[in-house]
Image (cartoon, rainbow, N blue to C red; front, top):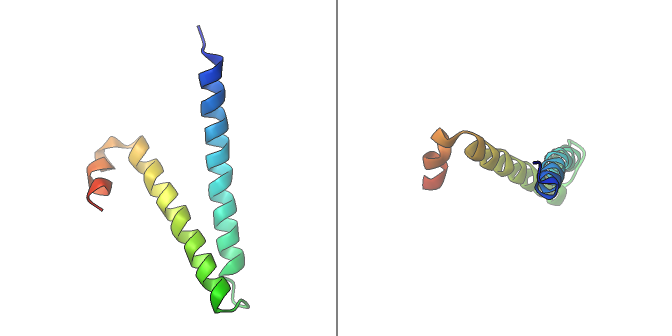
Length: 73
């Protein structure tokens, strides 16, 4: 029997995570563009950093071989 509440939680979490990474990367591109000033460029770099951390956690969750490497950081 399918547990629909668990299925819904996983589906919404995957959708929010996927859209969140795309939005963070888009904001990073927008804020770190060539015509922006220093404060916005820092915000763009912060968006890229958070996006990279989210991807690293996703890799750690999917591939258990890399989990000890990320645990040492």
